[in-house]
Length: 327
Image 1 (cartoon, rainbow, N blue to C red):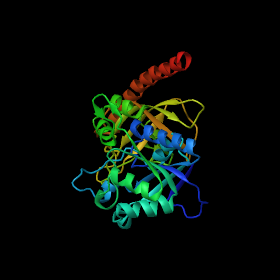
Image 2 (image 1 turned 90 degrees about the horizontal axis):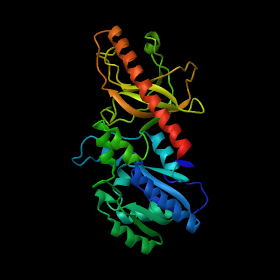
Image 3 (image 1 turned 30 degrees about the horizontal axis):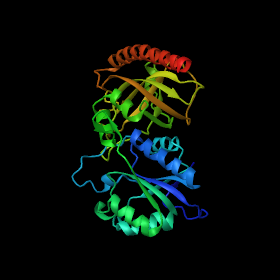
Image 4 (image 1 turned 180 degrees about the vertical axis):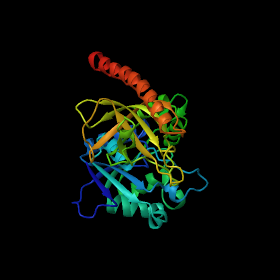
């Protein structure tokens, strides 16, 4: 899979099947849409591509929307899109020029001239062009004129409500991980590079790996906070159990600028892993993050968290083994 910032200028002309969307969370609705692109590309001899936007349009022009907490960081968005079989991911810079394009300009300059689209799929609520004035019907009409097919992917429901990034984001903010799992089709995860920290966990007897790749809103607030039982992928041939905290370290950083980190203590793991790419998979929430009176109280809380997480990880490991054994 190849990733491009902006329309690629140096590739040979290769006709594409394209899915367009923000793909925040890459939930089951997105996965279905991307699967349609892969299937259409295979049948027509096209390259399956996904076109998305950075920054998110609602961050640039909120138009009364609430501050948007991201579900994915960019790495996870790319990896999850690629897992659906997409071969190219194109991030369009959502700037003033792109925002002011008419629907026709977007179709002509981006889809046809830039990406050589021959088949395009979007969701039922897709809008494009200046102020989102273009509709799916406009896209179909432009496709007939400019030479690309348009398929409008039907909305996917879970229960009585549609699957959407808004619903997924709310489930994360409400700490409803069961709902999150149903919307994603898997556990929520965050992937990133291990960085050096202040080594406070080591002094408390619980060394952690630290990651600063938390998806946040424009005010620096994440959709996910607190303490979780987790699996860690990427450091061994099998998932490693642990306890993770998404925290701004309120006990030791009072008065300092707020910055959230993902700190994960991996059970019975003592190897150096700075610079490695790991994925933290969230199994269950243990509690909210909180400020403690002193480091001794913090240490006692971490110890209690670790014991609870070990039990939950053990149960999850048993479930995985039974699934692998009996399908």
